[in-house]
Figure (cartoon, helix red, strand yellow):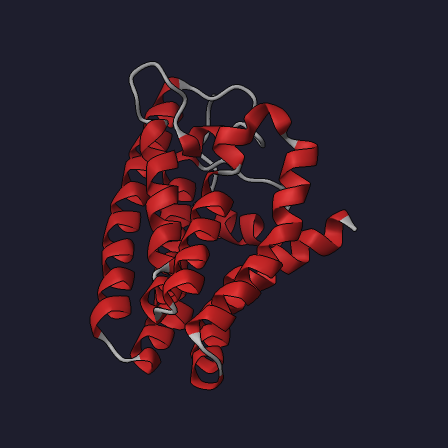
Length: 206
């Protein structure tokens, strides 16, 4: 059941633009908003049961999306439904920016420490810089999503939020991954790491 809920959440996130594009052409904004609320419910229950000590951090996005869909249901205005990708970027921006406070472990460093326990100061500073880069991405991508939601046609909104924004995200991740491997030459047993080790051989010495 836990795995099923996780898969459902991923499908909702990835398929949202395309599903909304076709949904709004056949149903009202109120109907689409109700459907999204129903799909969000399993994730909310899962979070409540598993992560009670981190409710403010983990429930921020689901609650914000639920509020947005309730506005769509109450007003029957499709702009609230189309605003979902912009809201996701806003919540992610808030979470990443919050970790850039002085004396706080940056978001990217938290991810890095899931794989490496002891990070040198140089890599900690790099993680902080990458976190700031992701913040800039969320600002630009969120603004683009909001503009497409408010002023573009549904088809252009679906194209950007369902394809182009993911391509931009993948490009940023790919560039950062390449820069990281070039700078630090830290490799694991995976096929991709072995390929990068051929391009950027490990440096001699400690």
